[in-house]
Length: 556
Image (cartoon, rainbow, N blue to C red; front, side):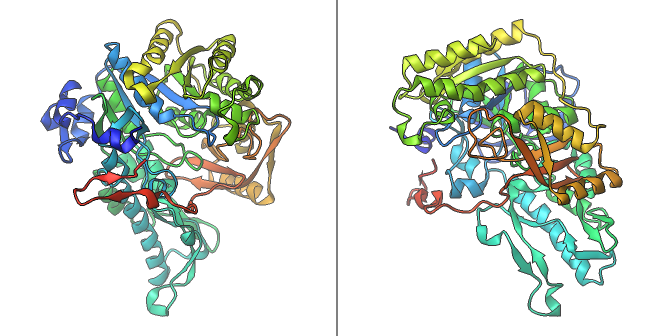
């Protein structure tokens, strides 16, 4: 069996100019990054604004498990399937990050015969967006410490600086650091630390900014810390926003590539879905809607995180109105939610499928709360039995959802035709009545309670004294009307990763609330959220290599 990278290396890619031409774009509309990658110029994006929008389809999933679900793979295969049916469709995905690529999983560009290519370049340095984010972020961090060194004119309290540094590597040794050691010439000693680049507020801003000037305005609003009398200090106070925006002038442009079947694809941005909104950029999505009749996009992790944030954050900010949602599930993952160990997933177990189905049931219910019709894609594995598949299909139909088998990993677009047909039928027969879940003018705790009860199924929300103090402070500062981004485990509807399926009679606990003033939301942290991953015992990097001919191996 070929690996993902071997399949990608056999791809017959078209020059990116041909892909652009299929979208009605000329060589003057794109900026080439080699033969198979390009960026869409901001001038072109402006020219497209008067065109009508296509239909928007979100791909999300049940709560992820070690058994795998295949959300990105389904997004790619569904789009290829739509093209096979003669539809003008394109896909919008998030950019992979080097940290996970070399740490945990070895890449993130789909899988099997449903991939975006050139897969190796997408998973490595691509067009340099992640590097631009890293350096724009760290420029601001350096200017904070320089201000302390140069007499501290802004009266920053070194113990109240909240803007950490970032790097696009998984490196637990950098989580907590001490900087400025070595004497007066090296600055002011203080505690600091690193997050992974995709957890940066700069990434969140890239994905939410409407244009370069909006990006600069948002950068200026980033709060880096507080004064000795607890007043906020911003990037604008440090006069950093202009230089930061300059570093991001190319990164803001969407990246155009293709699937294995030469379907156009935008890959642009992608913040951590448990610390930010976990979606690709507004710029890419809105541009795609001007170029295609149907746009397929995805949101990170399960629907309780990614989809909720897609609706309540991205769609709210950008004025997007999704037309349909695809919820990806697998028999294997449902059995894990039903209590089966990973080692036993190959054995038929209808009782476990039925028990685990309650997780999918909740996600279907949640999507309906936003007024968007749902299609369930059951991602087929070779170990699935017909009885197990039929049980999932019948139970999903019983909830009023369209259901289709997905075989995109093995068959590419051909394996996605059934899902594509169901999506088309949904778009034609079931009108979306999209609406957000809550009004931002409500108090912060009311908004959190709504998310917890409606989306997670919790009884309510408990707060640490520190979290309550932070909430009161942000409301006093005038930030109480911001939407909420809940950071919690992706593995459970609750904030306890061990509670699989559809837990009942639980509360979630908010232990901290952070302000992302530039991005425009509050981050409520429930449970333990990792913003700097560590490497496993055997990192993915151990399996990745290159030979004398430049051929890459081991990248998935």
